[in-house]
Image (spheres, rainbow, N blue to C red):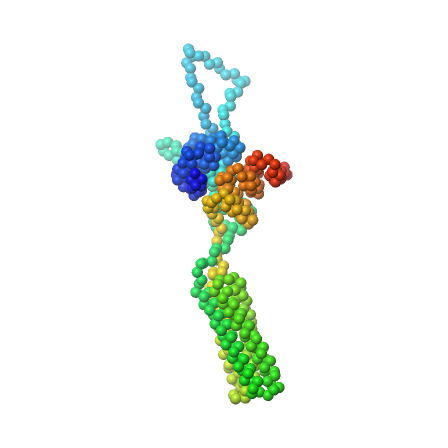
Length: 438
């Protein structure tokens, strides 16, 4: 029966009135005391008399149900109160009816009172979350008037305050909250990111090969150069070995992080590209001096300066293309692997157990989404209507949404269940204090 009720609620929220009506009818036929089923059924029946019947059944089960009171008031306002049965007319010979005194007012007809609610199609959803009153557009007919079509309230409510919005809005006009959220990145790694990761891995291999090469040069220099000249050259070579070895390990670590789609690796990749671009000039000068020093110390190559300059320019060009230009292009192309596009946030509530709805409401509340929290807690209360914790949370959510009457009703129900609960009484008093200040 609970599954049928939830299926009916989901169908009503989706605008599938006939399906929702069939499911909810099954619920009330099996359990005539199901308050929530009668309340939701009032939103998917067609005629005003059927709506009145459903709402009156709700009030028979729970006279304090604020949504049913509001719904009856709205039906009376829109369709006029139900007419009393006509009195029997008597002819003059059978009975004389005295003329009414002008000082005596006729007895008032019975009418229902209460605030307004939306109770047709998806409007029953709005009756629970207290949206703006619905618009009623009568359908013209040449032969006979037909039942009015109740236009649903504006869709896409703000998840923070519940104000109606449009999909193209990026900020709520009422609470000024950001309505955009970043979409989940694609599940598969892009080709650009794969190439970028392997490129840094190749850079790590090259750095290790350069480390080995410099190490052999270091050994060769110590054997062939004078002691004083070798001392300064060997110090530079030892520093170069340490730098290239560290770079090789960093590049390997970075390549692994990029292939695993770690955001820190993407940020580190950008930092290294910027540093490499600024260091290319200094690297070119340093490579020229280092290669020239090595060739001069070996004393085997003539015109060492020209050869050193040519070799350094080649090294700088290769490094610039390999570690600045190409990684920059690949970094731009692989942006979506780490950060999805900004889209309009549209939360969806899936049917679940009452505890799951309660925990989901807490998660929404922690993000400041009080409207979504109220919807989750409404479902938790519908599944377990006598749980004080759920009623307390829903009352606080209503208070945060400035729906004081509904907040008081929820807290009063919780206090009736647990009269000695100090937290409930404290929350109830705070709502009264806020109302008095206004």
